[in-house]
Length: 319
Image (cartoon, rainbow, N blue to C red; front, side, top):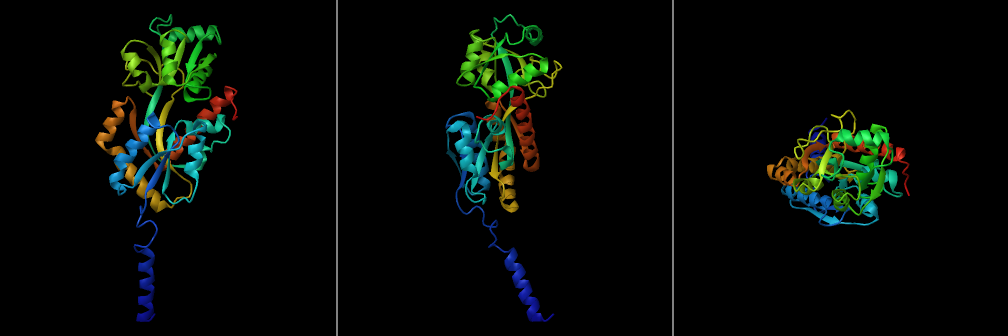
């Protein structure tokens, strides 16, 4: 090989690896984080917190845009639109694992490529302090002997609060009557006022009422006892393998170049490792986690399969 030919080949190699590759300048423009839920809600607050703490590692390019409606469908579809270039991200929530199985038109979980799961909120079952059921075992014994006699307040048919109660009912070999409300707060207040026998919610959502002794939490659907409810047994402790948490994370559409995904993933890992971010999450009563890349994809897939099974047993279909 001549010296001239070698020089040409070397120059070509330098150019191919040089600063003009698409990812080397990323991000060159604003990065939109599509939040399919309303401003001020829990998912929106998590989106803004993640953007705030990841922005120092992405040249301040992240911003959150709320695209609401259709039970999260409109935002989910919007987040998957356009070129897979890393300039549109999607805020993930529990609904992304549930909705494909109960809402027609919602993109399947496989359409999202998760960058991270950042926060979980183990779910609870709560009753009025004046309820005749003083322990979980009391409630379970009655439910087994009286299928569908107990009413359970939920945040809406087919939502996580409904499905966790359905999963628990199946596990104990019974069933409940489900009463939908417009959110977890009114469902919990209905339990507090004995308008329903019990309600389910995220653990963080029940904390204020529990501290005020307006509700009594009988079961925590966490893997281990929740720091919010250290005296409350988990379903697993009671002998029932039901562990369900709400979650939030961030994803891209499939097909984003690996180098760009790595830049994003690294930024969110650093954000989630920040002690101030962790404190912010803990102050809301939720649990910060650090699940990223392939582990995050496995998490979403597992959640989707879990909710699919529960929805089928509950007779729910996309409509």
